[in-house]
Structures are given as C-alpha cells and as structure tokens.
Length: 133
Image 1 (cartoon, rainbow, N blue to C red):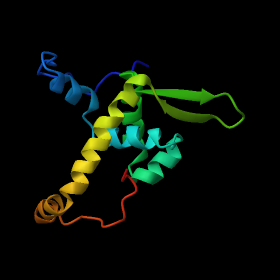
Image 2 (image 1 turned 180 degrees about the vertical axis):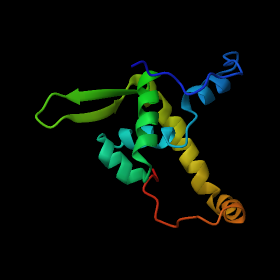
Image 3 (image 1 turned 135 degrees about the vertical axis):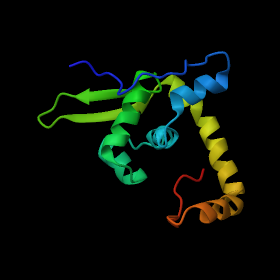
C-alpha cells in the first residue's frame, strides 16, 4: 500500500524564501518540541509522548515527517521486542540554536503571552516548564 496524502495541495510550495521553506518543512504543532527533546536525550517514542503529552498518532506522523525531511534519523533495533529510537541529524542539530532562542524569547515574554492565551483560550495548563535552558 502506497502512503499518499489525504489531499493534494492546491497552492504550490514556495521556495523563493527561506522562511517559506522553513514553514513548509517544520510546520506542525510538535515538531520543534520533538527536535528539542530528542536533543535532550529523550529518544524513545513512548518517552517523547509522555514528555509532550501528545496523541501518539499525531506524534508519529510528525516524527515520520522529520525523518523524511532529514532532521531526525529513525533507528530500529532487531530485538525480540521491536525497539525504535530517534536521533538528530546534522540538520536537526543545526536547528537547536534557533529553538533555544525561541524558548528564551517565550520565557522573556511569558506574562504578555499568557495574558493573550488566557483571553483567547480557557484550556491553559500551568505546569513548571522543563525546557528552560
């Protein structure tokens, strides 16, 4: 069975600007978080799912896209119980300074951002962050 997208994009992908390419490849609610946590040593799918609290199907799809685009390698172990781990590629590691900068920006502007979220969303979860660098 061939894995085909559910729909064909009507708008062509723009590659005339790095920001468009970045958005096209890394658009997804969890991709930057997945890259960050894999860099921190969380490499098993179950551990990533617990850390991010994301639906397994959604997480797997985004991990598969990160593998497809060359940000992450998927390593399968041929053991009695199949085991899979993920590791960053050079391209994935090159994103870490950007991700860390975004995290620092988010921390610096947290009060303003939380106010905006609270005004537009009543599902905010207040938990201590573990992504502070």
